[in-house]
Amino acid sequence: MNQSTLFGKTSKTSPKDEVSTNANLLIRGGFVDKVMAGVYSYLPLGLRVLQKVQNIIREEMNALGGQEILMPALQPKEPWMQTGRWSDPGPEVMFRVIGREDKEFGLGWTHEEIVTPLAKKFISSYKDLPLALFQIQDKFRNEPRAKSGILRGREFNMKDLYSFHANQDDLNTFYDQAQKAYAKIFDRCGLHALVTESSGGAFSKYSHEFQVLTENGEDIIFYCSKCEYAQNREISEYKTGDQCPKCNGVMAEGKAIEVGNIFKLKTRFTDAFDVKFTDENGKQQPVLMGCYGIGPSRVMGAIVETCNDGAGIIWPAAVAPYDAHIIPLGEEEIVTELLDEVVEELEDAGVSVLVDDRAATVGAKFADADLIGLPTRIVVSSKSLSKGGVEVKRRREQTAEIISKKDVLTWLQK
Ligand code: ATP
Ligand code: MG
Image 1 (cartoon, rainbow, N blue to C red):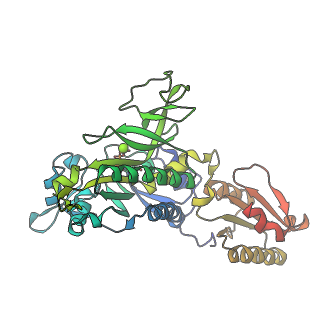
Image 2 (image 1 turned 45 degrees about the vertical axis):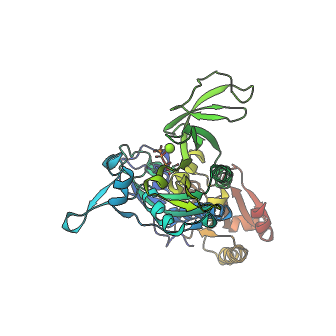
Image 3 (image 1 turned 180 degrees about the vertical axis):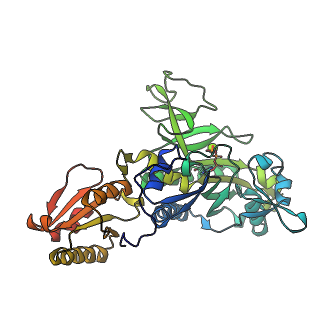
């Protein structure tokens, strides 16, 4: 991709109406554009990151045995009346839409009211269980405070998985597997997420949140810095300085971003929609459910919040929009020839590259490379050539080095 034709431009100045680090850097870097509070457009660079996060999640959901579906955002009122959630939490959370003849609809902020009746149509016997369905789709929530950039959208992307089970043991086993899959997802995305006990609602003691410690987080958790046992402050029995209940460490307080949440719903929704199956003895039994959410857009925001420095974003390799930023300096034929050779070799090897072919100063190009934050920067110039090849630098490191053209691929893969 040539940067001169890439849609979206970097900006030196911070947007006036944003207070969060993620929105500031993502807007300045040309990743997203703000439409209104809590609502953003994703430009090509931002969409590439979002899709990489989604694909990591998709791979792990498939490995868990999940089957991908796509449910509608526009939803009828009736199933929400049936669960009581049309009025509680009601419009506090759900955007309502009036259609023809004053018919009311809602925009989905979660999908139990759609997925449970859907699963009911296909579950009749124990042979139909267990079942795990997931989707990656946009959700709508009437959030009161939408000032944290893409961390808290009024429209935002979510992966939601719903599991259906014949008994508690089976739900418990799947829940533990889902927890492991979540840990793997955050790890692959370059995030360190603490499994945090939180309110389980009426149906179980705890649910589990995945919390990423950072000063800009909206949640507060108590955690053990030694074994990482953690509880959300909302339910915590601990305070700073208490001994950890799991080891000889000490509990500390920290701000954190909730990037994922897993929950045993048990029969909360299957009761509401009367979802039963026939067991091995021909007896009717209630189906048990679990739900498991991750916000890919919030994950992207959490990565920006935790991976940046004064100059810009530092994307973890697995989610970076491109692998390498190539900066040619000068128009000499030897430079363009070398550039073409390097680009061809890298692209043939499956390395994605962004070439800064703009007519800009060296300083401006380097500043933009730091702001955009691709994992590696490769400078091709007559100066680098005279020193023996191309100049390479990792975004995380301060110093550049000269390597010969034929070593670029091995250096990148190191
Ligand atoms: P929060 O407590 O932060 O409001 P929640 O507990 O209501 O979130 P869930 O309903 O469990 O969130 O949603 C699952 C996941 O979706 C969350 O873990 C988070 O990653 C993401 N998410 C929830 N709300 C938002 C939002 N407004 N913007 C972006 N992502 C969100
Ligand atoms: Mg939550």
